[in-house]
Image (tube, rainbow over all chains, first blue to last red; front, side, top):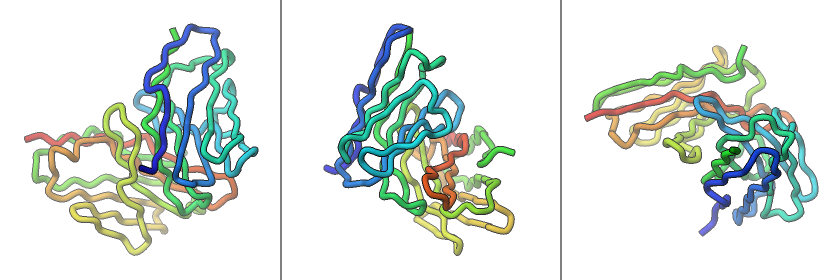
Length: 113
Length: 111
């Protein structure tokens, strides 16, 4: 089955630790995205990537880092510099065009203690 | 002005009711429009794209008014399973722009 997978589903970390969230897709999509969603809020774009070895900052990139070494994979690292990391993190992918809808993974719920 | 605005609701309706959601967007250069559905603690899933001529998919009808920068979603004969948050989403035709999400409108359908 084609789709987007994210792991883990739930993640707990101590304050001050870096943590990496996984995102993999087998849809042959060019573009991949990371969003953050807080309770009662809309999705906010963290980073996106159009092609391998290239990525761009979104609206709230501070305290996060990404890599795109393979077309299928777009991991997100939440660093200790991120002030409020507890949130629901969603990865998405699409063909690169503003006309194409994005498909989302199931999300990772990160809690920093 | 926020880029995409929606009435957060909640909209509480009985089964069988017709309910309409509205959404306004601020960027007149917006090119593509979508309605996504998000269930509690789940990822958003595409419900339907919105075309200039309006489009219908079963009980769901989407309309776009570019002049007023307004999008609507109409749900007829509401089902319990329609209970969810509905997200209005737009894209702008610029290189490197991703989707812009509204905060969503929550619908609760009761028996």
